[in-house]
Amino acid sequence: MPALVLLGAQWGDEGKGKATDLLGGSVDYVVRYQGGNNAGHTVVVGDQKYALHLLPSGILSPGCTPVIGNGVVVDPSVLLSELSGLNERGVDTSKLLISGNAHIITPYNVTVDKVTERFLGKRKIGTTGRGIGPTYADKINRVGIRVQDLYDESILTQKVEAALDVKNQMLTKLYNRRAIAVDQVVEELLGYADKLAPYVADTVLVLNEALEQDKVVLFEGGQGTLLDIDHGTYPFVTSSNPTAGGACTGAGVGPTKISRVIGILKAYTTRVGAGPFPTELFDEDGEALRRIGGERGVTTGRDRRCGWFDAVIARYATRVNGLTDFFLTKLDVLTGWEQIPVCVAYEIDGKRVEELPYSQTDFHHAKPVYEMLPGWSEDISKAKTFSDLPKNAQAYVKALEEMSGAPISAIGVGPGRTETIEINSFL
Ligand code: IMP
Image 1 (tube, rainbow, N blue to C red):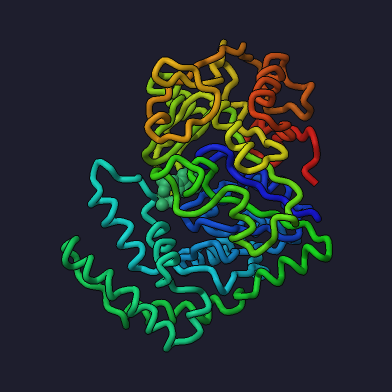
Image 2 (cartoon, rainbow, N blue to C red; image 1 turned 60 degrees about the horizontal axis):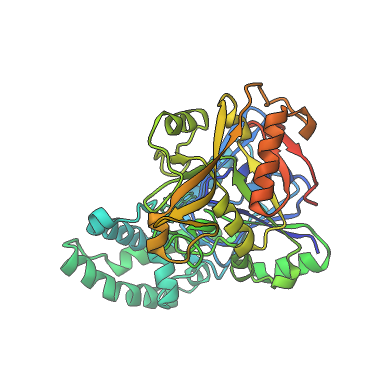
Protein backbone atom coordinates (compact mmCIF):
# COMPACT_ATOMS: atom_id res chain seq x y z
CA MET A 1 0.00 0.00 0.00
CA PRO A 2 2.34 2.77 -1.14
CA ALA A 3 0.25 5.76 0.00
CA LEU A 4 2.32 8.55 1.46
CA VAL A 5 1.30 11.84 3.00
CA LEU A 6 3.70 14.74 2.81
CA LEU A 7 2.84 17.76 4.92
CA GLY A 8 4.28 20.82 6.62
CA ALA A 9 5.28 20.25 10.25
CA GLN A 10 5.38 23.96 11.17
CA TRP A 11 3.45 27.00 9.86
CA GLY A 12 3.82 26.17 6.17
CA ASP A 13 6.49 27.16 3.66
CA GLU A 14 8.83 24.41 4.87
CA GLY A 15 9.90 23.59 1.31
CA LYS A 16 7.37 20.88 0.46
CA GLY A 17 7.67 21.51 -3.28
CA LYS A 18 11.24 20.28 -3.23
CA ALA A 19 10.33 17.12 -1.34
CA THR A 20 7.38 16.27 -3.59
CA ASP A 21 9.46 16.95 -6.59
CA LEU A 22 12.22 14.65 -5.31
CA LEU A 23 9.68 11.84 -5.14
CA GLY A 24 7.86 12.91 -8.31
CA GLY A 25 9.70 10.59 -10.69
CA SER A 26 8.68 7.46 -8.80
CA VAL A 27 5.17 8.53 -7.87
CA ASP A 28 2.12 7.66 -9.99
CA TYR A 29 -0.34 10.17 -8.48
CA VAL A 30 0.24 13.41 -6.56
CA VAL A 31 -2.91 14.56 -4.79
CA ARG A 32 -3.77 17.86 -3.16
CA TYR A 33 -6.36 17.27 -0.45
CA GLN A 34 -7.08 20.69 1.09
CA GLY A 35 -6.51 24.42 0.74
CA GLY A 36 -6.49 26.29 -2.53
CA ASN A 37 -4.40 28.94 -4.19
CA ASN A 38 -3.35 30.22 -0.76
CA ALA A 39 -0.52 27.68 -1.00
CA GLY A 40 2.72 28.30 -2.79
CA HIS A 41 5.31 25.76 -3.81
CA THR A 42 8.52 26.73 -5.52
CA VAL A 43 9.94 23.87 -7.52
CA VAL A 44 13.33 24.15 -9.19
CA VAL A 45 13.85 21.81 -12.17
CA GLY A 46 17.24 22.25 -13.83
CA ASP A 47 17.60 25.98 -14.39
CA GLN A 48 13.83 26.50 -14.41
CA LYS A 49 11.95 27.77 -11.38
CA TYR A 50 8.21 27.13 -11.11
CA ALA A 51 5.88 28.77 -8.60
CA LEU A 52 2.75 26.67 -8.15
CA HIS A 53 -0.24 27.76 -6.08
CA LEU A 54 -3.10 25.43 -6.78
CA LEU A 55 -1.70 22.66 -8.91
CA PRO A 56 0.00 19.67 -7.24
CA SER A 57 3.74 19.73 -7.86
CA GLY A 58 3.47 16.33 -9.60
CA ILE A 59 2.31 18.31 -12.64
CA LEU A 60 6.00 18.76 -13.49
CA SER A 61 6.76 15.02 -13.59
CA PRO A 62 5.73 13.52 -16.94
CA GLY A 63 4.80 10.05 -15.62
CA CYS A 64 2.69 11.37 -12.78
CA THR A 65 -1.06 12.07 -12.64
CA PRO A 66 -1.78 15.24 -10.64
CA VAL A 67 -5.08 15.22 -8.75
CA ILE A 68 -7.07 18.03 -7.11
CA GLY A 69 -9.11 16.23 -4.47
CA ASN A 70 -12.60 16.93 -3.13
CA GLY A 71 -11.19 18.74 -0.09
CA VAL A 72 -9.56 21.48 -2.18
CA VAL A 73 -11.18 24.83 -2.98
CA VAL A 74 -10.65 25.79 -6.61
CA ASP A 75 -10.55 29.26 -8.11
CA PRO A 76 -11.18 28.42 -11.79
CA SER A 77 -9.58 31.58 -13.17
CA VAL A 78 -6.40 30.94 -11.18
CA LEU A 79 -6.37 27.28 -12.18
CA LEU A 80 -6.75 28.04 -15.88
CA SER A 81 -4.08 30.72 -15.86
CA GLU A 82 -1.69 28.42 -13.95
CA LEU A 83 -2.33 25.72 -16.57
CA SER A 84 -1.80 28.01 -19.53
CA GLY A 85 1.36 29.44 -17.92
CA LEU A 86 2.77 25.91 -17.71
CA ASN A 87 1.64 25.02 -21.24
CA GLU A 88 3.45 28.09 -22.57
CA ARG A 89 6.63 26.73 -20.99
CA GLY A 90 6.11 23.35 -22.63
CA VAL A 91 4.72 21.45 -19.62
CA ASP A 92 2.04 18.89 -20.54
CA THR A 93 -0.88 19.30 -18.14
CA SER A 94 -3.38 17.01 -19.86
CA LYS A 95 -3.26 14.32 -17.15
CA LEU A 96 -4.69 16.59 -14.46
CA LEU A 97 -7.80 15.30 -12.66
CA ILE A 98 -10.15 17.51 -10.64
CA SER A 99 -12.77 16.17 -8.26
CA GLY A 100 -16.34 17.11 -9.21
CA ASN A 101 -16.95 17.52 -5.48
CA ALA A 102 -14.25 20.15 -4.95
CA HIS A 103 -15.71 23.52 -4.03
CA ILE A 104 -15.32 26.59 -6.19
CA ILE A 105 -13.96 29.87 -4.93
CA THR A 106 -16.45 32.31 -6.43
CA PRO A 107 -15.76 36.03 -7.00
CA TYR A 108 -18.01 36.86 -4.02
CA ASN A 109 -15.95 34.61 -1.71
CA VAL A 110 -12.86 36.64 -2.60
CA THR A 111 -14.75 39.90 -1.95
CA VAL A 112 -15.98 38.64 1.43
CA ASP A 113 -12.43 37.55 2.44
CA LYS A 114 -11.08 41.03 1.74
CA VAL A 115 -13.88 43.03 3.35
CA THR A 116 -13.95 40.87 6.49
CA GLU A 117 -10.23 41.25 7.01
CA ARG A 118 -10.54 45.00 6.59
CA PHE A 119 -13.44 45.05 9.03
CA LEU A 120 -11.44 43.08 11.63
CA GLY A 121 -8.80 45.83 11.66
CA LYS A 122 -6.20 45.11 14.36
CA ARG A 123 -7.68 41.65 14.96
CA LYS A 124 -7.27 40.52 11.35
CA ILE A 125 -5.91 37.03 10.57
CA GLY A 126 -3.62 38.21 7.79
CA THR A 127 -5.23 35.85 5.26
CA THR A 128 -3.90 35.54 1.74
CA GLY A 129 -7.07 37.31 0.53
CA ARG A 130 -7.86 34.52 -1.92
CA GLY A 131 -11.34 33.71 -0.62
CA ILE A 132 -10.27 30.48 1.10
CA GLY A 133 -12.03 30.94 4.46
CA PRO A 134 -15.36 32.20 3.03
CA THR A 135 -15.44 29.32 0.52
CA TYR A 136 -14.96 26.72 3.26
CA ALA A 137 -17.55 28.59 5.35
CA ASP A 138 -20.05 28.23 2.47
CA LYS A 139 -19.16 24.53 2.22
CA ILE A 140 -19.91 23.96 5.91
CA ASN A 141 -23.02 26.15 5.70
CA ARG A 142 -24.16 23.99 2.77
CA VAL A 143 -24.39 26.93 0.38
CA GLY A 144 -21.17 26.17 -1.51
CA ILE A 145 -20.78 25.79 -5.27
CA ARG A 146 -19.04 22.62 -6.44
CA VAL A 147 -17.18 21.92 -9.68
CA GLN A 148 -20.00 19.57 -10.79
CA ASP A 149 -22.53 22.44 -10.47
CA LEU A 150 -20.95 24.11 -13.51
CA TYR A 151 -22.61 21.45 -15.64
CA ASP A 152 -26.21 22.17 -14.59
CA GLU A 153 -27.13 25.79 -15.23
CA SER A 154 -30.40 25.66 -13.35
CA ILE A 155 -28.85 24.15 -10.20
CA LEU A 156 -25.93 26.57 -10.44
CA THR A 157 -28.30 29.57 -10.64
CA GLN A 158 -30.33 28.36 -7.65
CA LYS A 159 -27.18 27.82 -5.60
CA VAL A 160 -25.64 31.18 -6.44
CA GLU A 161 -28.96 32.82 -5.59
CA ALA A 162 -29.06 31.08 -2.22
CA ALA A 163 -25.47 32.02 -1.44
CA LEU A 164 -25.89 35.67 -2.42
CA ASP A 165 -29.17 36.09 -0.59
CA VAL A 166 -27.48 36.60 2.77
CA LYS A 167 -24.15 37.84 1.44
CA ASN A 168 -25.67 40.76 -0.42
CA GLN A 169 -27.46 41.86 2.73
CA MET A 170 -24.16 41.73 4.55
CA LEU A 171 -22.19 43.47 1.82
CA THR A 172 -24.67 46.32 1.37
CA LYS A 173 -25.89 46.85 4.93
CA LEU A 174 -22.85 46.02 7.02
CA TYR A 175 -19.87 46.67 4.77
CA ASN A 176 -21.37 49.44 2.65
CA ARG A 177 -20.47 47.70 -0.60
CA ARG A 178 -22.43 47.17 -3.79
CA ALA A 179 -24.56 44.03 -4.13
CA ILE A 180 -23.23 41.29 -6.43
CA ALA A 181 -25.53 40.30 -9.32
CA VAL A 182 -26.48 36.62 -9.53
CA ASP A 183 -26.52 36.47 -13.34
CA GLN A 184 -23.07 37.99 -13.62
CA VAL A 185 -21.60 35.37 -11.31
CA VAL A 186 -23.46 32.55 -13.08
CA GLU A 187 -22.24 33.77 -16.45
CA GLU A 188 -18.64 33.95 -15.28
CA LEU A 189 -18.77 30.47 -13.75
CA LEU A 190 -20.44 28.92 -16.80
CA GLY A 191 -17.63 30.38 -18.88
CA TYR A 192 -15.22 28.01 -17.11
CA ALA A 193 -17.30 24.85 -17.60
CA ASP A 194 -16.03 23.73 -21.01
CA LYS A 195 -12.43 24.59 -20.23
CA LEU A 196 -12.46 22.51 -17.04
CA ALA A 197 -14.55 19.62 -18.42
CA PRO A 198 -11.64 17.49 -19.72
CA TYR A 199 -10.16 17.33 -16.21
CA VAL A 200 -13.26 16.65 -14.07
CA ALA A 201 -13.40 13.08 -12.74
CA ASP A 202 -14.52 10.80 -9.92
CA THR A 203 -11.15 11.14 -8.23
CA VAL A 204 -12.16 9.02 -5.21
CA LEU A 205 -12.74 6.04 -7.46
CA VAL A 206 -9.59 6.70 -9.49
CA LEU A 207 -7.39 6.92 -6.38
CA ASN A 208 -8.82 3.87 -4.64
CA GLU A 209 -8.44 1.80 -7.80
CA ALA A 210 -4.88 3.04 -8.14
CA LEU A 211 -4.12 1.94 -4.58
CA GLU A 212 -5.64 -1.48 -5.22
CA GLN A 213 -3.26 -1.79 -8.16
CA ASP A 214 -0.33 -0.94 -5.88
CA LYS A 215 0.35 2.37 -7.56
CA VAL A 216 2.31 4.96 -5.57
CA VAL A 217 0.04 7.78 -4.41
CA LEU A 218 1.43 10.86 -2.73
CA PHE A 219 -0.90 13.17 -0.80
CA GLU A 220 0.54 16.65 -0.69
CA GLY A 221 -0.59 18.98 2.10
CA GLY A 222 -0.76 22.73 1.65
CA GLN A 223 0.08 25.15 4.51
CA GLY A 224 1.25 23.34 7.67
CA THR A 225 0.31 21.58 10.92
CA LEU A 226 0.11 24.75 13.02
CA LEU A 227 -2.20 26.35 10.44
CA ASP A 228 -4.70 23.47 10.72
CA ILE A 229 -8.22 24.62 11.61
CA ASP A 230 -8.48 21.97 14.38
CA HIS A 231 -4.90 21.48 15.51
CA GLY A 232 -3.27 24.81 14.72
CA THR A 233 -2.98 28.13 16.51
CA TYR A 234 -6.68 28.93 16.12
CA PRO A 235 -7.97 31.47 15.11
CA PHE A 236 -4.72 32.32 13.31
CA VAL A 237 -5.06 29.36 10.99
CA THR A 238 -6.30 28.45 7.54
CA SER A 239 -9.80 27.02 7.12
CA SER A 240 -8.94 23.41 6.29
CA ASN A 241 -7.06 20.37 7.66
CA PRO A 242 -3.49 20.15 6.38
CA THR A 243 -2.79 17.50 9.06
CA ALA A 244 -2.61 13.85 8.01
CA GLY A 245 -6.27 13.04 8.67
CA GLY A 246 -7.20 15.69 6.11
CA ALA A 247 -5.68 13.50 3.41
CA CYS A 248 -8.34 10.85 4.08
CA THR A 249 -11.35 13.17 4.07
CA GLY A 250 -9.97 15.48 1.41
CA ALA A 251 -9.28 12.69 -1.07
CA GLY A 252 -11.73 9.96 -0.07
CA VAL A 253 -9.15 7.38 0.97
CA GLY A 254 -9.41 5.36 4.19
CA PRO A 255 -6.79 5.77 6.96
CA THR A 256 -5.84 2.08 6.67
CA LYS A 257 -4.45 2.85 3.21
CA ILE A 258 -1.86 5.37 4.41
CA SER A 259 1.52 3.75 4.92
CA ARG A 260 3.82 6.70 5.61
CA VAL A 261 3.43 10.26 6.82
CA ILE A 262 6.39 12.54 6.16
CA GLY A 263 6.66 15.89 7.93
CA ILE A 264 8.59 18.65 6.20
CA LEU A 265 10.56 20.51 8.80
CA LYS A 266 12.60 23.64 8.20
CA ALA A 267 15.91 23.80 10.11
CA TYR A 268 14.55 27.05 11.64
CA THR A 269 11.00 28.43 11.80
CA THR A 270 8.96 30.88 9.70
CA ARG A 271 5.40 32.12 9.67
CA VAL A 272 3.33 34.51 7.53
CA GLY A 273 0.26 36.30 8.75
CA ALA A 274 -0.70 37.05 12.33
CA GLY A 275 -0.63 34.80 15.40
CA PRO A 276 1.68 33.55 18.16
CA PHE A 277 5.24 32.47 17.31
CA PRO A 278 7.39 31.87 20.41
CA THR A 279 10.83 31.75 18.75
CA GLU A 280 10.27 34.78 16.49
CA LEU A 281 13.35 37.01 16.17
CA PHE A 282 13.20 40.78 15.87
CA ASP A 283 16.97 41.30 15.62
CA GLU A 284 19.69 40.95 13.00
CA ASP A 285 19.59 37.14 13.27
CA GLY A 286 15.94 37.19 12.14
CA GLU A 287 16.86 39.56 9.33
CA ALA A 288 19.76 37.27 8.30
CA LEU A 289 17.52 34.16 8.23
CA ARG A 290 15.03 36.07 6.06
CA ARG A 291 17.72 37.25 3.68
CA ILE A 292 19.75 34.03 3.41
CA GLY A 293 16.66 31.80 3.39
CA GLY A 294 14.84 33.98 0.83
CA GLU A 295 11.89 34.07 3.21
CA ARG A 296 9.30 35.89 1.16
CA GLY A 297 5.88 34.32 0.43
CA VAL A 298 5.50 32.68 -2.99
CA THR A 299 1.79 33.54 -3.01
CA THR A 300 1.55 36.95 -1.39
CA GLY A 301 5.10 38.31 -1.66
CA ARG A 302 4.93 39.16 2.06
CA ASP A 303 8.11 38.92 4.15
CA ARG A 304 7.95 35.86 6.39
CA ARG A 305 8.47 36.21 10.13
CA CYS A 306 11.61 34.22 11.08
CA GLY A 307 12.87 32.51 14.22
CA TRP A 308 14.95 29.64 15.58
CA PHE A 309 13.96 25.99 15.44
CA ASP A 310 11.20 25.05 17.87
CA ALA A 311 11.34 21.41 19.01
CA VAL A 312 8.09 21.71 20.98
CA ILE A 313 6.24 22.33 17.74
CA ALA A 314 8.08 19.54 15.93
CA ARG A 315 7.11 17.04 18.68
CA TYR A 316 3.51 18.22 18.46
CA ALA A 317 3.55 17.72 14.68
CA THR A 318 4.87 14.19 15.16
CA ARG A 319 1.99 13.45 17.51
CA VAL A 320 -1.01 14.93 15.68
CA ASN A 321 0.07 13.58 12.31
CA GLY A 322 1.51 10.23 13.39
CA LEU A 323 4.66 11.19 11.50
CA THR A 324 6.90 8.32 10.41
CA ASP A 325 9.75 10.50 9.08
CA PHE A 326 10.95 14.05 8.67
CA PHE A 327 12.44 15.79 5.65
CA LEU A 328 14.65 18.51 7.12
CA THR A 329 14.94 21.45 4.73
CA LYS A 330 17.18 24.50 4.36
CA LEU A 331 19.98 23.29 6.63
CA ASP A 332 22.41 25.30 4.45
CA VAL A 333 20.75 28.56 5.56
CA LEU A 334 22.22 28.04 9.06
CA THR A 335 25.81 27.87 7.81
CA GLY A 336 27.96 30.57 9.37
CA TRP A 337 26.46 30.93 12.84
CA GLU A 338 28.93 30.20 15.63
CA GLN A 339 26.19 28.90 17.86
CA ILE A 340 22.62 28.03 16.95
CA PRO A 341 19.87 28.35 19.57
CA VAL A 342 17.19 25.63 19.52
CA CYS A 343 13.99 25.95 21.53
CA VAL A 344 13.64 22.78 23.64
CA ALA A 345 10.75 23.85 25.91
CA TYR A 346 8.71 26.91 26.88
CA GLU A 347 8.54 28.93 30.02
CA ILE A 348 4.95 29.88 30.78
CA ASP A 349 4.25 32.01 33.84
CA GLY A 350 7.56 30.91 35.41
CA LYS A 351 7.01 27.17 34.74
CA ARG A 352 8.92 25.01 32.30
CA VAL A 353 6.56 23.33 29.82
CA GLU A 354 7.77 20.56 27.49
CA GLU A 355 4.69 20.17 25.27
CA LEU A 356 2.53 22.57 23.29
CA PRO A 357 -0.02 24.06 25.71
CA TYR A 358 -3.61 23.43 24.67
CA SER A 359 -4.70 26.85 25.93
CA GLN A 360 -4.41 29.74 23.49
CA THR A 361 -3.68 32.14 26.37
CA ASP A 362 -0.75 30.01 27.59
CA PHE A 363 0.67 29.72 24.09
CA HIS A 364 0.55 33.49 23.65
CA HIS A 365 2.61 33.80 26.87
CA ALA A 366 5.11 31.05 26.02
CA LYS A 367 8.75 32.13 26.13
CA PRO A 368 11.31 29.87 24.44
CA VAL A 369 13.86 27.97 26.55
CA TYR A 370 16.94 27.69 24.37
CA GLU A 371 19.76 25.18 24.20
CA MET A 372 22.83 26.38 22.28
CA LEU A 373 24.22 24.02 19.65
CA PRO A 374 27.64 24.59 18.03
CA GLY A 375 27.45 25.90 14.43
CA TRP A 376 29.59 25.26 11.32
CA SER A 377 31.12 27.49 8.66
CA GLU A 378 31.85 25.03 5.83
CA ASP A 379 29.74 25.14 2.63
CA ILE A 380 27.41 22.14 2.86
CA SER A 381 25.59 22.54 -0.47
CA LYS A 382 27.72 19.87 -2.18
CA ALA A 383 27.21 17.24 0.55
CA LYS A 384 25.75 14.04 -0.91
CA THR A 385 25.74 11.83 2.17
CA PHE A 386 25.23 12.46 5.85
CA SER A 387 28.91 11.86 6.57
CA ASP A 388 29.86 14.62 4.07
CA LEU A 389 28.36 17.13 6.52
CA PRO A 390 30.66 18.86 9.03
CA LYS A 391 30.54 17.20 12.45
CA ASN A 392 28.60 20.09 14.02
CA ALA A 393 25.98 20.01 11.26
CA GLN A 394 25.61 16.26 11.82
CA ALA A 395 25.19 16.86 15.53
CA TYR A 396 22.58 19.60 14.86
CA VAL A 397 20.54 17.18 12.70
CA LYS A 398 20.84 14.38 15.26
CA ALA A 399 19.78 16.70 18.09
CA LEU A 400 16.71 17.86 16.13
CA GLU A 401 15.82 14.27 15.33
CA GLU A 402 16.01 13.26 18.98
CA MET A 403 13.94 16.22 20.16
CA SER A 404 11.32 15.88 17.42
CA GLY A 405 10.46 12.23 17.90
CA ALA A 406 10.81 10.82 14.36
CA PRO A 407 13.78 9.94 12.14
CA ILE A 408 15.09 12.54 9.68
CA SER A 409 15.18 10.65 6.40
CA ALA A 410 16.27 13.44 4.05
CA ILE A 411 18.06 16.77 4.38
CA GLY A 412 17.87 19.74 2.04
CA VAL A 413 21.23 21.49 1.63
CA GLY A 414 20.32 23.87 -1.23
CA PRO A 415 17.35 24.88 -3.39
CA GLY A 416 18.16 22.72 -6.46
CA ARG A 417 16.62 19.32 -7.17
CA THR A 418 19.88 17.49 -6.51
CA GLU A 419 20.89 19.38 -3.38
CA THR A 420 19.41 16.81 -1.04
CA ILE A 421 20.92 14.15 1.20
CA GLU A 422 18.75 11.04 1.21
CA ILE A 423 19.28 8.96 4.34
CA ASN A 424 16.35 6.53 4.11
CA SER A 425 14.33 6.16 0.95
CA PHE A 426 10.70 7.30 1.25
CA LEU A 427 9.52 4.48 -1.03
P1 IMP B 1 -5.96 31.89 4.40
O1 IMP B 1 -5.52 30.48 4.20
O2 IMP B 1 -5.77 32.75 3.18
O3 IMP B 1 -7.35 32.00 4.97
O4 IMP B 1 -5.01 32.55 5.54
C1 IMP B 1 -5.04 32.10 6.87
C2 IMP B 1 -3.63 32.07 7.47
O5 IMP B 1 -2.88 31.03 6.87
C3 IMP B 1 -2.82 33.35 7.25
O6 IMP B 1 -1.98 33.56 8.37
C4 IMP B 1 -1.97 33.02 6.03
O7 IMP B 1 -0.80 33.79 5.98
C5 IMP B 1 -1.67 31.57 6.33
N1 IMP B 1 -1.37 30.79 5.11
C6 IMP B 1 -2.24 30.39 4.16
N2 IMP B 1 -1.59 29.67 3.22
C7 IMP B 1 -0.31 29.61 3.59
C8 IMP B 1 0.85 28.97 3.04
O8 IMP B 1 0.82 28.27 2.00
N3 IMP B 1 2.00 29.12 3.73
C9 IMP B 1 2.06 29.81 4.89
N4 IMP B 1 1.02 30.43 5.44
C10 IMP B 1 -0.16 30.32 4.80
